[in-house]
Structures are given as structure tokens and as C-alpha cells.
Amino acid sequence: SNEYTNLATNLLQWLKSKLDFLNSEMKFKTLHDVERYRDVLQVIRHDEMRRYQRVLYRMKSIDAEFETLQLSQTLQPDIESIHIAWNKLE
Image 1 (cartoon, one colour):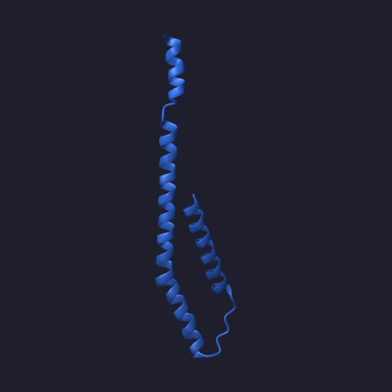
Image 2 (image 1 turned 135 degrees about the vertical axis):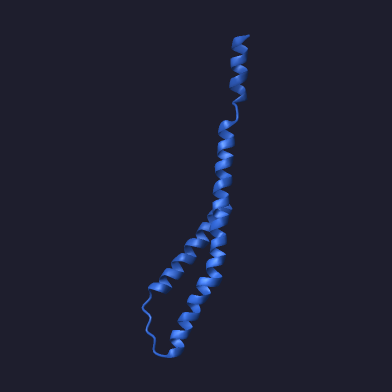
């Protein structure tokens, strides 16, 4: 639960920063400004996206583990109820 919360928080912070960057008004004054912007986009696409795809994959894994745990716990027989029922039958 703690790991999932940390991953989700980091992912949301990253998304917000990238959306802020992409939505900001760019005023390119020189070719260097355009190239710098293109380089930042390249880093986002190739490096950061891979890292955050791994974060999403881990979050999905945690979700699946949690669902499996919940399912296995709900399918566990209630031993106390079985003992009570057995005693009533005797």
C-alpha cells in the first residue's frame, strides 16, 4: 500500500510537471531555443516515458497482487463458523 501510494504520487507529480511544460507558452527567439525544446521532448519521449511505463507496470502488478490477496481471503473458509456448525450437528 505504501509503495503504491509513493509510485502514484511520483507519477502524478511527473505528469503535472510535463503537462505544465507542454502547456506553457513557448516563445522561441532563436534556433537554439527550438533545439533545446526539441531535446527536452526527446528526453521525455525516450528516457522518462520508459521509466514511468515501468512505474505503471509495477502499479498494475501491485493491483493484481492486491486483488489476488483479497480473492484468496474471501474464499478462505471461516473456521470458527464451521466449528460452530459442526458442534450443532453433533
